[in-house]
Length: 479
Image (cartoon, rainbow, N blue to C red; front, side, top):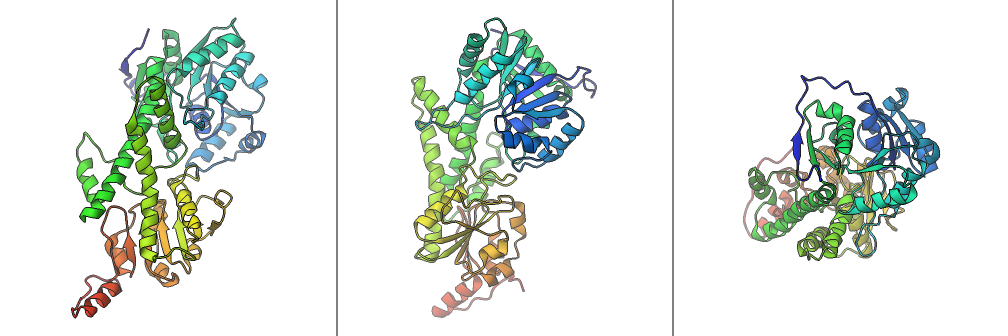
C-alpha cells in the first residue's frame, strides 16, 4: 500500500506558485467546515460549487451573506462570487457531474451511545456516485472514525460499479474563529490515500500552498482518519489537565497561570491549550472524544483516560457554579450576569457552550440569569429562562454577580468603575482568567478566578482589619 507512514515536506519552488490549472470541485455541506473549504479553495484558484440541501442557506450564500460568524469568511465569499469561482446549489444533479474532486463536509453528530452518526456521509457518497459522469476523487473532510473510507468506497461501488472512484482522507484542522487563517496558512496538510494517482491529484489541488512550503503529510487512509480523532482528544486532555491542576492550585494557594507558564516554557509541552477555565465546548471536542472512545471500545481496547477527560471538563462548569454560590450564599432570586455565550471568542457558535451549560445550572438553582455576547444574537431559545441583553452594561445592571464565560478581547477593556457602580454587589467570577486580580481589587471587586486565590476588595480588607484592631493602607489603588 502506497504512502503508509510517509511524511513528505514539499519545498518552495523559488517562491512561485506552480502553473497547474485550477480544478473543478464540489463541496457537499456548507457548514463550519464546508463553507471555509469552499471559499479558501476558490481563493487558491479552483472553481468550486457548494452543495447543501438547506435551500434557505444556499439562497443566503448566493446573495453573498454568511450563515454564521467567522472572521474573513464573508469577504472571501464575496470575492469568490465576484470572480466567478464560487457558486452554490441545492441540485446535486447539476452540481456534481464533471467534477475532478468532491469533498464530503457533512455533520457526524454523536449518537446516544457516543458513536459517530455517519448516515449523512453515506448519503453524500451515494449522491456523488449517482451523478458522477466519470472518475472522481472523493475526499472525506468530515471527522470520521478509522475505517469509514472502506464503507464510503463500498457505497460508491454499489451505486456505480462502472466508475472507478478514488477515496481520500483529508481531515480538517480548523479552529473556529481562525478557520480562514488555518486553511490558507496550515501547519500541516494531511492526506491519506491508497494510490499514487490519488496522492498526485491532492498534490495538484494543494499546489499553491505546497509551493509556499507548507507541510504535506501523506499516509494510508486509516492513519489519516485516526489522526484527526487523536489530535482532538489530546488537545481536550491538555485543557482538562489544566482544569484539574486549577482545582489543586486553589487548595494549595498557588497560581495556575504561573504554573502553566512554567510548564509551557518546556518545548515538549508548549503553551497552547493549557488555559484553565470553564472547559472546552463547541461541536468538535465533545463529540469527537466520545466517538474516539467508542472506536477504541469497538476495537477491543478500553481507553478510560478519555472518559476522565470528559468528566474533568464537566467538573470545570460545576466549579464555577460553586464559586458563584460561595460568593452569594443563596442563589435563589439572585441576578447573575454571564459575559460571553459563544463557546469561544471569534465565533457565534453556541453548540455545547460551557456558558449555556452554566446558565442552565444557575437557572435550575432559581437564579435570574442575564447573558451578553458581542456576536451571538439570541441564545434564549436554547436555554429556557435565560434573558439576553445586547449591551454589556445593561446586562450587568443590578447584578449580584458577573461571570466572565468567553474571553472576548473586548472584555479586557471593561470600564471596571462603571461596572462596579451599576452592580448590586461587586462580585466578579472570571471563568477564563482574563482580568488582572490587582486591578479588580483596586476597582472594589471581590474577584474569584480559576486556579488562583480569591481577591477581596480593599474596603472589605480594611473593614476586616479594623474589626481585628489593625490598620491597612491600600497600595496602588486607582483614583
